Each structure stands twice: as structure tokens, then as C-alpha cells.
Length: 267
Image 1 (cartoon, rainbow, N blue to C red):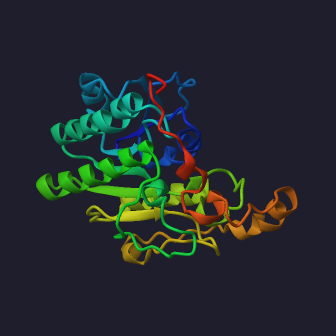
Image 2: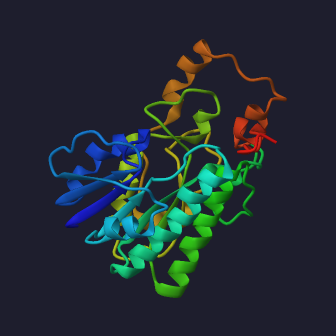
Image 3: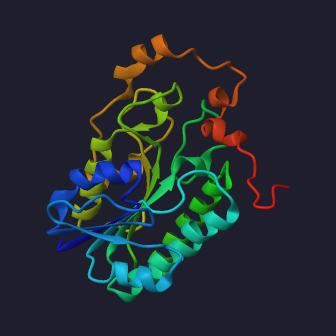
């Protein structure tokens, strides 16, 4: 690729991907609504509000691929989620349609299935059961990606990211952890395969305790290498197991299932 766009580059995952994906394109265009650190090597920085259609159009122009990590990444008010995750994603897809339909990796979330129990093993085609307004916006994103693929041929990898951190930080993450290196490896395969389509991919490492089945996307050639099991003893020594009746021990979405609706009017 000549130019790869990474949105949400000021966030935790975005910062980790800046170095790990630098080899994928001659130029890496990084973007966020928040201030970005100084451009390194082959980077160019563009500050952009995803809710601004004109700014997003200019952001996407000239890009051969898009890793879309941008938007609100936790539960928030509907107004903020709507601007970044709903209007903003529509703006991104319209900009992609106007500029040659570069392949997109869309960061969805495991929380679109948050109200499944932890003793259930899920295929990617299960009915969505979001646990927050944030994850409802990700359901919208998955539907939008599907429509743009079916209507226009826009290819998108819909990646339901589990818990993408340097290492698991609680017991739930023994099932949901996605290492930075495994995610970078997935991005590489998404942009390498000759035909992508619009698959749903569980963004999870090769964890012994995983809840999700990725057998339908073997054609990508992605083989996660990391396993959260190596952190189990450390976690068990430092953290008590949650009560069996607690949401973080019952639901795949963990504590997100208990998030209140955040209202700007405080009602």
C-alpha cells in the first residue's frame, strides 16, 4: 500500500499499532480527535472529528487501506456515541465510497454479544445481544459494513475485538485477551488476502479459555500465537476470583452489563 490510514491513533490500541503496522505502507496516516504525538518515520498526522463529513472525506482521500479504531471506545452519553460511532462511521464509509473503496478493518467489539453467558461458545452468526449503548453503536457499524459490501462491494473485516492490552488484567480477560502482536498479525492478513469480503472475525488470541469460534475465517491465514494461559498464575495470585453470582463471572460482557444509561440531563 502507498498510504494506510489508522484512525483512533491516540488511543491505547492505536498507539500500539503505530509501530507494529509501520511496514504496511509507504506512508501511515494517523488520525484522532485528540492531539497526537509527533509524527515518526513514515507517519503523517491529521487531527479529525469523525462527525465532520468534510474533514473525514479529506482524511480518507489518497488512502489504500483503513484501520478504523476511532470513535468512543467506552460507554458514554448517546450524543457523544452518535457523533463518533454512528454519524462518524457513516461519514467514513461515504468517504471510502467516494475515494475508490479502500479495504477497511472496522474495530467492532465483543460487547455486541455481551449478554451471552460465559459458558456459551459462540459462532460469528449468533444473534446480537449488546450490553451498552456503546455496543449498540457497534451493532450499527456491523450492519453498515454489511450493507456497503452487499450494495457497493466495499470490503470490510469486521473485527469483534476482545480485550486488546499488553496482558490480561482480570480473570475475564483470560478468555477475551487479544495481544497487540496478534492483532497486528490479523491486520497484516486482512490487507494481504486477494479477496476479503465482509467477514466477522473474533479479535482474540489463542487462549485456552476462549469463548468464540473463528473457524469460518481460516481462509485469512491468521494464526494467533499468544495465549493468556501464561498469565493465569500471576492473575490468580494478585486477584481474587469474582463471586460466581457477579456479572463479571456470568456474562461475556462482564461489568459492562451493569453500566447505567448515561444521560446528559442526569435523569
